[in-house]
Amino acid sequence: MKAFNDFLSTDYGLMSLAVLGITIGMAFFFIRYFMSEMKKDKPGP
Image (cartoon, rainbow, N blue to C red; front, side):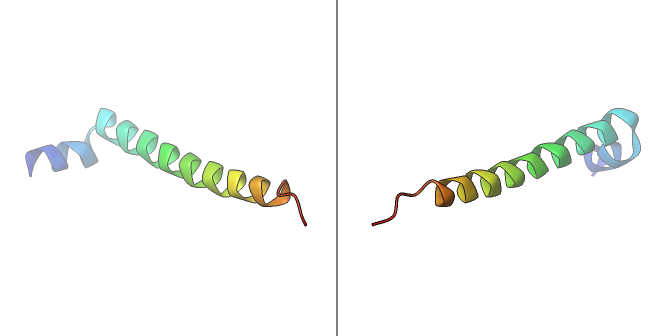
């Protein structure tokens, strides 16, 4: 519980939370972007 409290109340914990959020957001963006580009480039019959 102490680790979780430190994670949410210290400056380095909040910065880690921000980095995790940005990284997860970028992962979703790139997955969505690459999937749409693969659909666009798919050769038709």
